[in-house]
Image (spheres, helix red, strand yellow):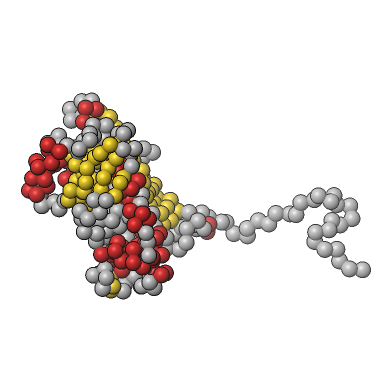
Length: 367
């Protein structure tokens, strides 16, 4: 007589009898599941010290509470409107992982978010970050947060809290995700939306520092898969190593924006991020207007030209994927452009006249 298979109930047992659960022979901890609380606590202590360097008298709480407390200065903002933005670094992180460079991605994140609210006339107040990883590597976390802290301080923004999450099995070893939220304020009469843009206004462009934080999926495919470059390989067409060209920090335009807005010179501003000029500039155009952009008005940096060549990428695709060397566009009334250019020249800020506002249907027209 053969033994019954395990799935077949023995005589006298109900057919739906459940298997006896197996218990662990020794106690199982959270660390056994991949989450090291003790290591996380050590990381939080380091983060606390770095964040404190960004605090000002408006910060009323310490890192580690359930929420960050910030007192709005009602003397500086008597008619306050809060402006917020949230973003991430995207697949630029893949390059950071491969190169082991983690100190710049924090600045990328902060500066991106700062620009997004500064183009609406807002002053950054405080920042919250979110870093999630599979296995917590304290040195990496500290390096990332140091970058966040330094960028916050440079932009006059307090890093008042955030979250560092350990999620084993969700992220590959050595990888993490990084996102952040910024809160700023502007007095209601000083909000810049683009509503005041008029026919004949001038488009003034400010240079980017490379890809910033957009278009990396296509750039990585072209450079690493199509061309077969290594991240440490020097490429003549780029005049740099591939990884270094890709890791250039997303610049902050806050200081130059403040100079232009202080003089009441700006009718609207667009931060050129994902979607390029093609999709970002129309976001501030009033109904019945187009932006005419002269493609010959600036020199496209070598990185973008080489990407175009490697993939035989169309002009249309390039212009709606990358910033093409223009990171910010300010719309200036024609009668104020001379003064705006003088301010930029005194600040040693490179700039170019990209085109003008004409009648149209809220789109960008390239010449």
